[in-house]
Length: 330
Image (cartoon, rainbow, N blue to C red; front, side):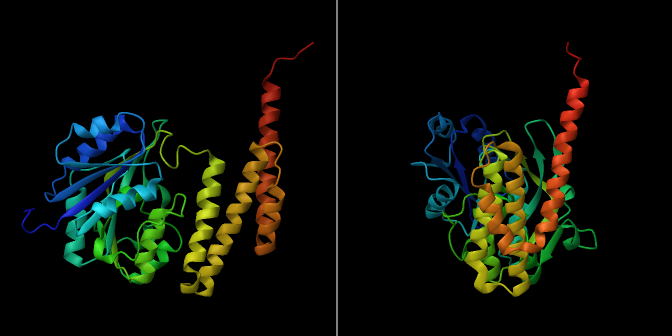
């Protein structure tokens, strides 16, 4: 694309103590085939050599702030963003060279609010998978003609984003004018979900996605999700964040949408309770949490019983197998 006809896109890269892999993220932006870009690295209070790493690159704006979390770092970058379009790349992720060109091409051609792309996920134990193929959550929305890109109207976008967020921070590019608000700094992990729901529910956003894998997500145990244990992740994301999102949008949801959220929250509380049963001793106040969930959504009690029975049987079976495999003692 020619810079004269290509609107400026601002790329915000929030980072915290990721100096060794940050350079890969920056290089992936510099190698983009899309020419007109502003690169902003927001250092969220790192104590490693992040500043020195960024200084090795020309044309990259470096901003340091006291540690305030991922959403605050993105909002700091947003204050300095001059682009018509905005993208946020996590410092452990990598874009394919044509990521921006494809995404902005769709935004321009169809005058959309935001677009997002499928990705390849690499885990620390060397597992690799195609996210959309793995989750199947976007299957019903794919273009029946087999095209890689699918344009979604606001109704479809609403249906998708009220059920889940299929687009983590590194996967989407949005039109700055389509924003309703900034990244929500009261949300623990799901700040991207909240940002996009604002556009869908309050600005009537039309969107698009591609099944083509245009970026790579790497997990190494240090990013916002992988650095937390399963209990923290379940509590902060699946219970606290989902509850906060329901309260933020409750007045704009119909009865079935509210019921879906309530059921999801209750199920997540049950699952968190079960996880704590099998991982913590003693379980302290977990019974209070379970009682609250049963009161708000009692019809899920059979599910709790079945889940609890299954997990108990699985735990007992594992112990029995382990015992039988040990040599006899005299």
